[in-house]
Image (cartoon, rainbow, N blue to C red; front, side, top):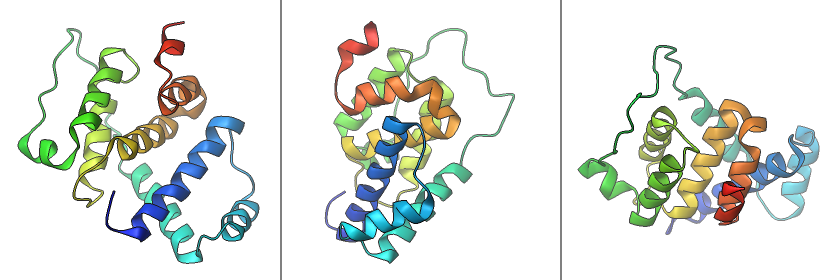
Length: 161
């Protein structure tokens, strides 16, 4: 995300919130979190935008219970729109975590759809990692905490052990 300071700052707030969830498994009280964000220089408008963005992401979750992973592994081919919207290294990251079994086809599609709805010129690797973390946490933050912590730190070896 380059060129729009407000969006970059909103993403920074989302990253701070995701960091709290990864470390503590929960958020501090809303008032405490907002006070902390204000004290480090974020504006109320930016904080509100971050919470609204996360809420919108959670509303776009796939709710189709009949959606099942394929029994035979498949290869995902990105459309022209997806290729233009998502940076090459971000697409590679998604394919890597899919091949490692960290996410399934349904979660992959959900992340891609959320990326396309961000209205950014190009989604970077950092952006896709944040979207992935938020998507996994929206499904079950306890189940995915270790995996998210590993890929946010680029520590792939811990995923194999």
